[in-house]
Structure formats: structure tokens, C-alpha cells
Image 1 (cartoon, one colour):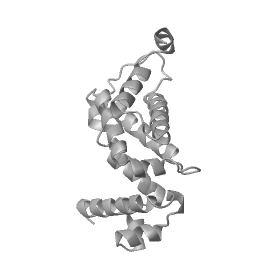
Image 2: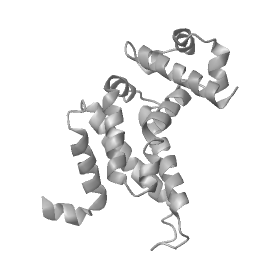
Image 3: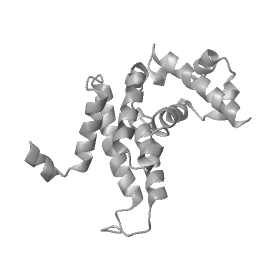
Length: 188
């Protein structure tokens, strides 16, 4: 199958799971329901994804993270976070339901891993070969640390109804990652 064919089927499957998630929890949606709604046969699904959690990972990567990756690479972190929060807000119904996915394949664990991988890609691409203050503070550790903090804030925002504006969320995250605890204590 060509790249274009795979992409259109992936989009069709993503649209299908999103529509189904409007009426019920993602963990209760079956592959058969996804493929029936998409108008494809079950083997087609398995040619693209192992399971619905891999499809969810594809949605997170494709819709949320790949668009912000060039911005991060070019030092436009604040703009990247505004785009991230805006994209989530535009599909509020789906992401509000998706963030409720718990257990082994929780939305949180999938999102955190995806964020870590994107950040690690950017850090690896931008690495100059300089050694940091401590050799154990590796790009992997930095990516995991920031994935943890970003996923926490995004999930908290989604779980509390996304009542804070996109700009305010981006500003808050920017403030938190740019200031030490000592700096924040002085501001309080």
C-alpha cells in the first residue's frame, strides 16, 4: 500500500474511533466497531495498527505532537504549546473522553511516552556534543522529565474541563519550566 493509502486509512480509522468515543468509553470500543464505522474490514485495521491503543498513539503523534515538533526544534516552545493546547481544545469532546482511559494502556502513559519520544528526537537532533553539568543528565532523562511535567499539566487541564484559556495554559507552563522553585517562592 502506498504512503497516501495508508494515511487515508489511518485517518478514516482515527475518525471512526473518535466518533465512537462520543457515546462510550474508549476501552469498551471494539476493533469491529471501529472498522464497521470506517467501512473497512478487520484485517485492514491490523495492517495499520496492533490495537486501538496504537491507534490512539497515532492520533496523539499525528494531531498533537508532529505539528509542534518543528516549532520546538526552532526554539519556539511557547508557540508550540499554544498550538498543542489549541488543537486539544478544538477536539475537546474526544480528548476529554480519551484522558479518562485508565489502566495498562492509559491515555496518560501513551501521551507521556509520545511526548518523551518527540522531545528526545528534538534534543538528539539539536545536540552539539557538549557535555552537560553532569554526565548522567542525558537527553533521555531530560526528555522524560519534561514529558512528565507537560503531560501532567495537559491532563490536569483536560480533566478539569479545559476552563483555562489556551494562552493562559501556555503562559503557565512556560513560567513553570523557566523558573526554579526558589524563583516561584519569591513571586508568591
